[in-house]
Amino acid sequence: MTTDVLAGTLATGEPAAGVTRRSRTSSRTRSRRPRPTSGAALYRPWWTPWLWVAPALVVIGVFGVFPFLNTIVLSFTDARPLGGGGDWVGMDNYSRMVADPAFWLAVRNSVLYAVVAVPLLVVLPLMLAQLVYKKVPAIGFFRTAFYAPVVASMVAVALVWQNLVSENGPINTALQQVGIIDSPIPFLSDTTLLLLTAVALTVWKGLGWYMIFYLSALASVPKDLYEAASLDGAGTFRQFVHVTVPGVRLTMLLVGIMSGIGSLRVFTEIYILGGATGGVGGQARTLPFYIRDVALDPIAGNVGYGAAISVALFVLTIGLAVASHKLGSKEED
Amino acid sequence: MTWWRTRGRTRALVTRYVLLLVVLAISVGPLLWQFFSSLKGPQDALYGSSATFFPEHPTFAAYQTVFEQVPMGTYIRNSLIMCLLTVFSQVVFPTLAGYMLSRQGWRGRGIFYWVLIISMMFPFESIMVSLYTQITDLGLDDSFIGVWLPGAISAVNVLITRAAFSAVPNEVEDAAMLDGAGELRRFWKVYLPAARGAMVVVVINSFIAAWDDFLWPFIVLRSEELYTLSLGLSRLAASSLSYDPRVTMAGSIIAIVPILVLFVALQRHFFKGVESGAVK
Image 1: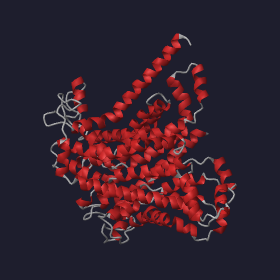
Image 2: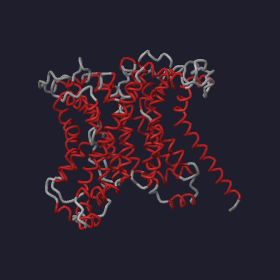
Image 3: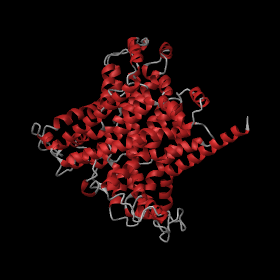
Image 4: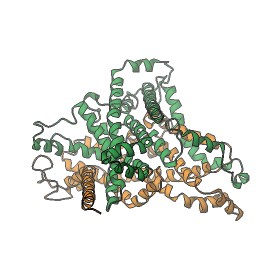
């Protein structure tokens, strides 16, 4: 859902909470000078607006805001799934978490995921957008085709990848035929390789999605800057570094935050590629994967402990957003 | 124009198309490979050095098998039910709320706005434990309603429609009022047509999200007759039912094709929206 904030911000031009840059001057003038109120407001009973927003307010309040407060409360209890437990246990879940090697492994995996995926998802879609920005013949076909992995469902494309990188799959076969490797690369059985393969899948599926954001951003880069740069003798690469990148820097920051948060949310890629255990012995489990294993087993589940890990995941997410925000605003000065 | 400039342009254009084709191979190649492999007959090698890209003995046998081995029809039906429920609630209720949020001069507008913004701060994975206990408390676990309800109305869609309604000038509303049009009539005749583009975006996004969703239905649903396509596929792949990889391949192609068709049919609106700045 946090990824949606940013998508929503982009879609509406509205600043979202916490994560987005607030352009100081414009938001100030906007709030100080409200648009003239339409006459309709004067004829509306006070309760009519509430009637219109009621369904959204109730569902979003109950399933969007309350769960977070509830998670914090649950993290101090020994609640079980399907009721039961629920006694106050203080900080027990948190002290257990700090001493739990499986938790730290999941943190490491999720952070590693973000560290590898984010730079790729910030840079590659920008290059892709640059490639499809100019309207050459058949460009509509290429744009649509590049977007195909985005709309295909994750389970299905993860199964495609599972086949591609299997022991005797086409990638290993091709590498062996060219003679780069002698024995097949264990993409799916080695924990690190499994994580990297999952990252590659995430990146492959995300390319088109982030390309769209850059496409809109590129439209606002002044054309004459390119002409000036090329008159100064700058080649394609230097134009990219000195004109394109500064021109879309804010979008890069936004894509960085979005893909970072997306990386912390990964579950399906690991589940399909690494199996129900999350890699050999659960070694490749990400944080959401571990939360599910801990909390949501109907018999052995421990909701209280799972809630504590959920709070950790939330803190990590917000920390990442704030850190990127700081980084971005520092560069602006 | 001097000769070297023309040649430089041609070369740039050729380079551009070569790069486009390379990216095309990377993005669509794996899907095509899966598709053609799913059509391969038992005589055609799937893997290894003797495998070809195109099937030499094309057959739909794997597609028949996948329907026989697992209740594929039920999975597809369940996925469609989830999509229709979600698209319906994501179009109707956020539009109503987005309209009122775009109207000025009522108390509580700011509070509603902040509820929306705050709800978007929490990644689903960090609140799913609470959501699961809430759903079981309501007695909705292992049901479609339980899968649908928490994601039935998204704050982001309220904001998207709100932005579209805000673009309508106040004068238009005032003129409609002078003509004696009531609130509902103004909403229906004046505002809704202005938000058509935003609603297409909402429809596409929520259909894809519901079709794609895995983790939440996976947590809520246990009965196999309620499985969505994503759940059914993962079960098919994990079980020993499909000793023939062609069957799993056929299953995944069945999951990908409808959504691709929908997208290609609507892509004109989608990219138009992007270019006009619907995604800024």
